[in-house]
Image (tube, rainbow, N blue to C red):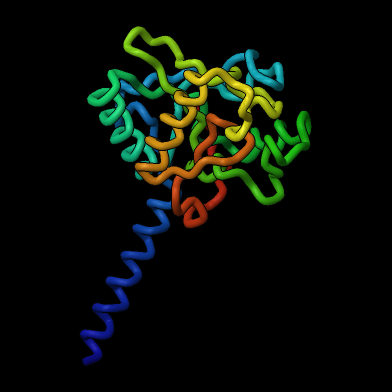
Length: 202
């Protein structure tokens, strides 16, 4: 009986180590699906801060999130001849603090005191591109912090509304949840199970 108890303890300990390792596992998105387009504005000065926030233009994400994005990519390609384009994924907490200093408005930038889902590697900023690589019209540019970027904003052409609905529906189909104020932002279901990280992007 003691041997069985010891074995169970060792197994539980091993699982706890694996869980801890998986909780800190941030991987390059392209290691999961190299066909997904990226445009990392925060690796340039072409963003709302006017500063280069990332030293690399690679998108990093939790592995489970990347797998879901790959499924969306396949769905879009097969059924619409479209693809995903990702603007942002995992975001170090130190970058979140810098963003908050510039725009302390939790309608658009999460307070670093509580952290962003991006800081957990469980959120993405995303749009859809056509077969030529052109972004579908969504009514605003990425990181437009006005009511026009809200999903419920109705004074938009019908094709723009349809594009937003397509993006929202296909993201939700594979486990992502939208927010009200940014048509491009989606949180992966279960984001609360991941820790906030401040791992540097390389």
